[in-house]
Image (cartoon, rainbow, N blue to C red):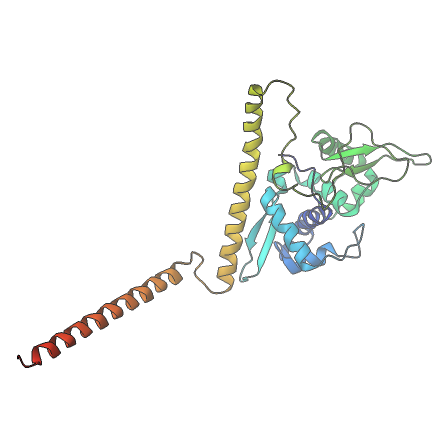
Length: 285
């Protein structure tokens, strides 16, 4: 599974979930409103955004479908909350996640900036430690080093969770770059998040195995989407005070339906009995 096509709103939501887990653990997991406020902070964010609640909720729901987040119930609260699953999905440790979160929330950074700005999430002792973390992210295809421009003393790095970020004129990356992806690209989720398969130049019969390989990540993505929707439906029913499984409503409906049938049968039998009595009371000719 590749996560190189996240939209800007998905990147921002994921970065906020990672950040707030360690900077405000007493408020984590985050409700939709808390997540919206975190996304739209005027500090420690570049660019500063003004996402509405619907945008944040939809981005969080999509992250759940991709396996990067999940619904979580808060203690003593019925509000729907979210937590990230980046550790499991990306197989990263705390230091790598902290650096990745800074790149997601603040864009291109130097190693020195990453060291100071990730300090609230993870303690990285030296610039050499930051360089090691960046090498791990680069090897995993999650970040890349940008070529120095004239007058720049330090290398800069950007994340690749949304493809290659927009760089300034004349700025290029060292190594292969990932294609940039529009936030509005049609038909991109969730199936297109799977690793792209090379075109098959062989005959029609040799293409079947590749098609089967393509289907497996799509089925897994759809299964995750169904589980996420089931969890959200159960949370909504619980918030409304309804049975999460809907058993009581169905049972009550069956009882009412059975009662109506019984009443109809009793009325019909009563009418037949009355007609029989009237017929027996008539005199014979």
